[in-house]
Image 1 (cartoon, rainbow, N blue to C red):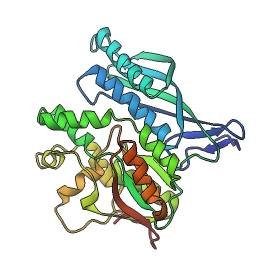
Image 2 (image 1 turned 60 degrees about the vertical axis):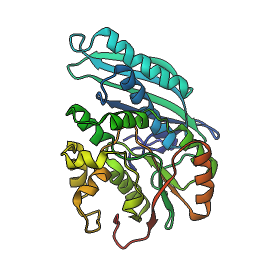
Image 3 (image 1 turned 90 degrees about the vertical axis):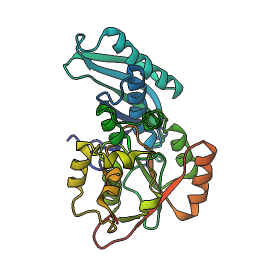
Length: 310
């Protein structure tokens, strides 16, 4: 890979976005995210895809500025009216987050995919990365888990109406207010919870920071009805892959293993996972609450002989 001293955050730490310094006061924050349909309504799908892509910029403490769209479909599978609704939903989400579309691209593909490349800005010294947690930092999560399980139940036509509405609502919730609370408080590290699940993204934070973590199972928020969907077998394939990837890295209490599945569940447009020093925890909780963001303290980082999540 070409060396460039203006590249402040690249691919080596598996962070949410790249950060590239333009000058002493401004750095670009850039990311791209593409997903397949997770809900039936095309406008909701477009809206969620946009919120999901914006989240990478917010997780870095950045301000999104511009977006480019990407849509893959075949007209025989997705009518132009539906394609238009996907784009309309995305434009609505971007407008609400003050992010401007500057272009886009479509390709012919038998599998429907939609996503966005987002560019934002951040001060070069203020980017929030995923590998700078400190021993003793408290861990917060801003959205409940369960979108992968709920989506699997939706595809299997087994999802209760209440869960269907809840998981769409959470996916459409922007992480912008939570990011503003992080920046206002001055947190140690952060990431957003997406395809690798809570434990996968926490593991990236742990390994990057050289720390272990202890979680309180009872404090980890889950969407209403998700555990019942697990009991019905609605566990997505991605959760199994996430569990296999973390084999030997996570220790659980001796309770029913079914309770663990939401922690491996691949999320779409999940919440922010935040590390903050204990002396700033109250300030973060107040800032999150003032901005209407749920406050869930779920654990803490700690030094360990071997990096491990307990």
